[in-house]
Image (cartoon, helix red, strand yellow):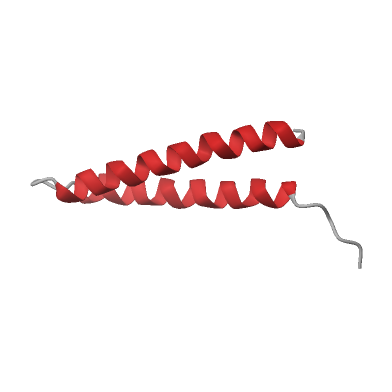
Amino acid sequence: MDADDVKVRVVELEIEHRDLDTAIELLNESLTVDALQLQRLKKRKLQLKDQIIQLKMQLIPDIPA
């Protein structure tokens, strides 16, 4: 993946991360909370965050020591 592909993927993952945040918020506000579904959404959100961080690290050039 070149830098442009990584940037596009980061944006896609950030959008999905925000969408999950909204879904989690709506699920918390509902009268019947499905704890398992909520847990799965939160886990997926954390996985996305980790992927975003890893991809952003690829964009930072190595600094020679």
